[in-house]
Image (tube, rainbow, N blue to C red; front, side, top):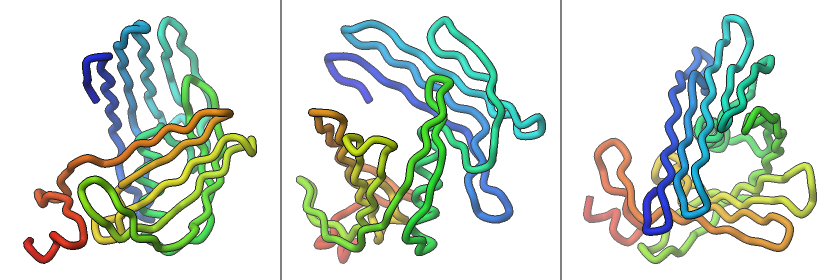
Length: 182
């Protein structure tokens, strides 16, 4: 993401296990804004079941357990879980050397309207460990369950992320009315 206020670059490398689950391998995030610079990196060592991380000038190691993810690989596992028809699931995200457990509940299908048009979606709610921290995630059922929209609620703030444009397997992600043109 890049705009006049700054730039954020996030990268993740992962593989898919024989069981069809995401296995994170490495993650990095760099952020430059008017408020300063931030960075984070993670190296997953599944053979030794450890994660080496660095955040700004701090580094460390933590023990790994199955179903632990970086921020980006978690999104990929969320897509797999939703596509498989699960109604509830839980995963742990590792961020800044800290573990956060999230519970997910599928609320059901919904047609979502965006500035680009309408999309068939599956609405999933992420419940935090605190009632004031939640997220709603709309996954595009016609487009391999990619994230169309995410709303996060924390304390007294609400953040919204909406997919503006994208491609999946070389095809532009189009709303329902334009899919007939493919």
